[in-house]
Length: 345
Image 1: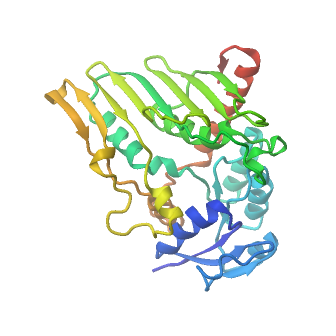
Image 2: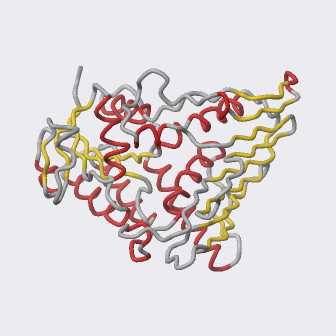
């Protein structure tokens, strides 16, 4: 089996919880090097991977074909550009960049060098979202009229020593959690005609946005995306209504928590929810009303697709242009919040 050598540009939360485990269990990849500037956290888990102290060490290694840029958002553009210029394929942690014009530059650079540029939008492979796609593909709600998605948390304090709470990093909940919700909506409905937004700082002492409501404009369906860090008692994560029925889903996909607990992806029962967590489908089609089984989530499908792309067998599931459209929506949302008006795309 052809092995793809990988260099991991960071071993923080995303490297430890998502990228390294998903790459490790996929037989098509070999983690060659992991960038840790001062620590050696990866040594015990991935002893065969070389620890390097500088990004240039990843780029000089001819064994590395794919570089995973999973550093803080503000470094994405420069590091992805360096990797592409060095002839490496690139997977970027979401969001792709913080400025869609810079995203355009990276896309042009990758295209010009015939290199892959993709973004880790793992929430496309949440079990609940896969289930929603199945329900909609089968037309089980009739003609869809309303879609509302939430990504709520409860953290009523300002977390110390993290770039995600630093306004100088150009981040906040809209870039962080919003990237997931927007990407899912674009998968389902395509590019919206306009964006209307309310973006707020709600936590005491907060310095970056920690709550938002977005309305994406489509001709036939009302799309609302919401997130907040002050939701102690969460409601449904998804509320979807059509002419023939509704689907409501509470809870969140179990994969992230399992990965945080050190479980390796892909084992028996991976990504499966207990029946108590299934959503409720109420539809006139087939007169069905009750719990509807959640499909198993599968974050590993993202990197399996990347392997198939690099070996010439598939097209990218997450393209750089799709990822950059997410940034265009975010930029329109910021403009809408400032002006109080709808902003056309």
